[in-house]
Image 1 (cartoon, rainbow, N blue to C red):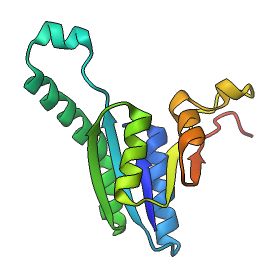
Image 2 (image 1 turned 30 degrees about the horizontal axis):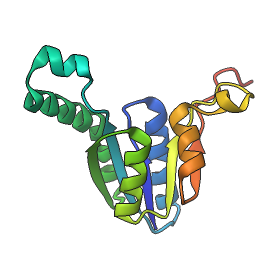
Image 3 (image 1 turned 120 degrees about the vertical axis):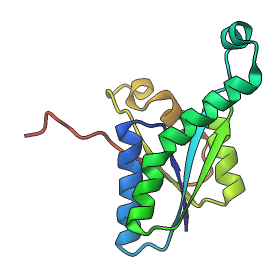
Image 4 (image 1 turned 180 degrees about the horizontal axis):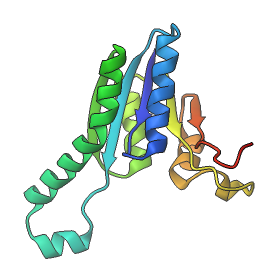
Length: 147
């Protein structure tokens, strides 16, 4: 089974990577697809820098930097994985990678903040929930207020 894991450099996305690795270590035969999506350069960035190649290099370096800890975790656990660095609208690009890689499920972090539906999940998480053709497991933040 292939699991898509969005990696954005946050501790929450690393918890999602850790959860997927735990599933593999527990016996789930899986390959992780670790993906970082860089948003396209803004008009301001294009106007001020005037060098689309330099902007692309900066975005690639940022994406590789965000993916590096997730790759190291998967390698350290001996879990098969591939990494994908893409540019585009985050949700659309994640769904395109999911389809292209043949992922049967997604494991991702969720910034749960409240009980109101629109605030329950972050905007990317909510959009993925609404648009994904495959099941999604949301990994919640550690509850620091728990007794």
